[in-house]
Amino acid sequence: MLFQDRRRAGDMLAEKMDHYRGRHPLILAVPRGGVLVAEPLWKQLGGELDLIITRKIGAPYQPELAIGAVSGDGFIMLNEQLISRLNVNRDYINKTAKKEQAEIQRRLKDYRGNRPMPKIDDRLVILVDDGVATGYTLLAALRSLQERKPSNLVLAVPVGPPDTFNILDREVDELVYIEAPAHFAAVGQFYREFNQVSDNEVKAVFHRSGMKGERGDG
Image 1 (tube, rainbow, N blue to C red):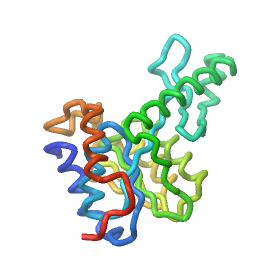
Image 2: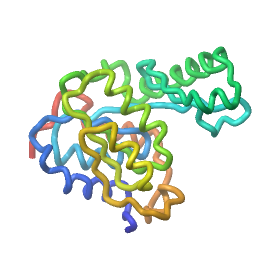
Image 3: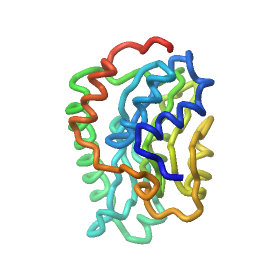
Image 4: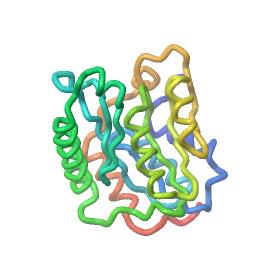
């Protein structure tokens, strides 16, 4: 299946998630692309729309190779086996984690201003992205959210490989997806339109959502 664009993918996810309508979910989008998927989901389900950002900790001299990931609230998930194999020292990990956390905070402030982060505990939380490949940063986001004790944790992603979904499914109360193709190269191959999402587009979504209170049902 090819999705027309991210918004249509969000509509399709919403069709599978009508059982959450009226339960005032907290919908957390992964910017930038996940925000365009999350907006139609929020419009259909109601609740509150906000952001979550995680950043990978890249290996020394191989920044694209993730040896860990960090969230905005300081949660750190490390691949200890890879760290040991590469003989990465802890000073490097700590410094890189702090740098990435600072970048997360900078982006959150740019998108959200000084608005307090939403309450997580005892809430239905739905994490949304436009697709998943290895799933490492999404896994870090889920485990960060688990630390804050939501009543239910749901992951909604239009497309990803089966092996990654098998890993992520163990972390949530429900995994919702449209396609899990066996032959998976990149998220973008499953979208007719997969243009890079700008910061201004992200801000526009949250301007429309009001970034305040809860959307009324319907």
